[in-house]
Image (cartoon, rainbow, N blue to C red; front, top):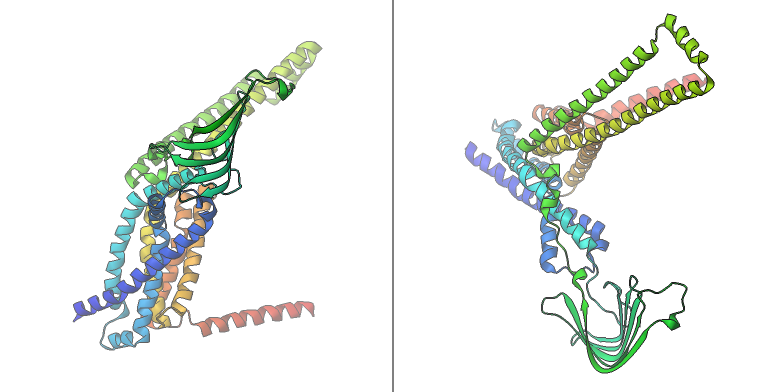
Length: 482
């Protein structure tokens, strides 16, 4: 009986989970495309490259979509069971709410394991591959698309314009080409009544066959900027047919190798990140000891040379005053230079120390992030499932509104904690687990209320509580005014 109940609850959960997961993925991908749409449109990268980018984006947003799907589906599943009185029937049969949640808890453990594997081995590489691909696509020049009557300037040292373009046959009419090389003061102007355009077999060159035109060349490698152009060597050629090859290799998509980014912490699994953190901590301690030693040696040398005791200070001052003015200037200049050098050294080492501390925090953030995603799956389940049992509303109305509000709070706390940890405002273990620290008590409170059917978070009760607080505050304010 209980095994059938377990399977019934799991089946009730799986479909909402799959649906909400892919809906969340779709919304997040659309949001991403909206942000980067202007950078990606008109690049002519092809369907295969664009599909590859979509795949990387799909993998990258899993850490956001998975917790949101778990929260949504947990509220919807338990809300549906409560709305259909199935949850009431289970309780009447002696099955407690914790027993009803048990099969889903084991599902959450499996999802937490999958999410840990994903965050440890997949997410970083997907993020890096997406970042590299977007960078390459953004830096790629516009694809070779000529528009009628508009100069195309995306080929190095060339400007091409055609008044008439037949895109099916690639025939051009009234062609004007400017070729210029500022380094060698070289310019060529080509005019033709018509032409044909095609790419070479290797795709590296644009081959233009032009008819009935003329070529005007101006060459002056040693030209002075003040000279008149009329004295430059000039050549004019009239042709009935000519072929021009133009290098268009700069228009191709250059793919960056992932090996160039191998030092990114997010690429490393947990055990390698642990080694990196230990190594950085050792370097961190070494720099700290070096700074402390330099400071102590500087103070010791200063004390030994100046003898800071009160009874010898007057002797020191007297001896300095007794020096000749020129000698005194030399002594003071040397002391000032030594002090400035010490300050500059300490400032430089302090800056290096701070940069290393930030990088160490960045690596520690990547280490903690491997675990926070896994734990968030379980925490959000214990927030969503009891909340659904309390609300007893299924469907896509109240559950979605509540889930999105809770998830926004969770996500804001997570991002804020990560930023504070990266900027050394909070220790990394506090910043990265800040959202868990907030949601674990909330999940425990909701679970307790759902199991005991108490009114700890009853809306009416909290409303009355806030009304009493407001009345007390207003009464105190009015009494003070009187």
